[in-house]
Amino acid sequence: MRPDRILETILYAADLDAAEAFYRDVLGLEPQTRAPGRHVFYRIGSQMLLIFNPDETAVSPSPDARLPVPPHGAHGAGHACFAATAEEIDAWAARLARWSVAIEADIRWPVADGAPDGAPGGRSIYFRDPAGNLLEFAEPRIWGITT
Image (cartoon, rainbow, N blue to C red):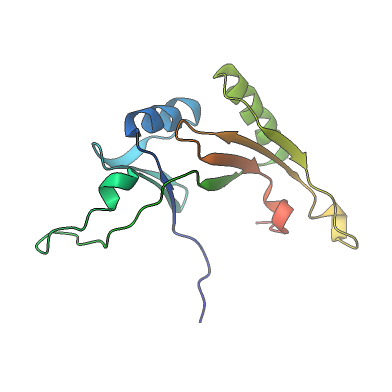
């Protein structure tokens, strides 16, 4: 038995209002749920992107809390990568430019020796959210994923 997919990706941001504005305005995501000062959650396909305030999630819940999730949190930049086609990456690069979001790297990954049909290869672009988290749009084929 082993896991077969990721359900949640977690990033941390002390300024949740700035994070929410970025993910809404720049990336076009709508919050599924939010708790002011604590978290904002987004559904992306069959997965969830959770943005937590690290200081708030480090606090232990009271023993009678409705959902006693253990304390957790991280300080410093995290990383998340969103899947995109080559055409979508071009469109995302243009959208990021319209929002004055700097692309830190635009990488065309080398084709592996002996890879069928020129895979994996592919392209990634990297940029940051207001909390400093490194975000990426990449073609899934950079990992040999075709679905």
